[in-house]
Image (cartoon, rainbow, N blue to C red; front, side, top):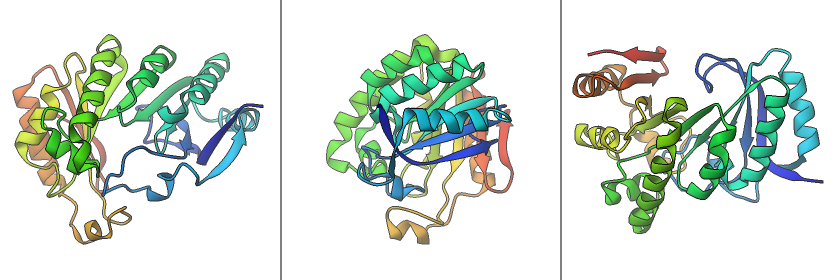
Length: 251
């Protein structure tokens, strides 16, 4: 019987899949070590618990009485892409939508999954065109070039699925928060014309030092977002903050 390793499952969420109520499946295990990670317990591939796909589908059936979609998150769900593909097919058979949040560093998996998904949130954690910044931001400074190459390949793949793809960047003071970093992220997106700047939160982080770093203010994110909206009129720009949730930003 096919199984997946999960960190958990949330029956109802209004923040993961845009405009839809979704059930969120959190897959265990991640291939990055972002120092600002808000979900460090989900990193180890040996954590969490195994569940059969049949058991997960039973939970989805319960959630689908209220939810319009299932959203796959983590950890990094693309590490378990076969389970994601199976569950996405099941969601569609149930008349529901399927989405994913991915770090974009496993392009072969994304290539296999993209056709099966109705929404793709790709975390462009720092500009792939500046590998040293990207390497530090994902906690693997010696592998910046490698990570950048994989992320660029994923972004290339997603050009064919640009209408259902949104880039997301968590803005972390001291790592990736310079205006030139945010512009370089936008420059890497190609036909992907939606981006959301997320507010770093310091309540739980992989690196304890970052718990002393103050999150960027809503005003700072608005300033960065307005800069992008002015520079790229065809780019849909949003921010997410703990104070106000998701907001679309215009010049």
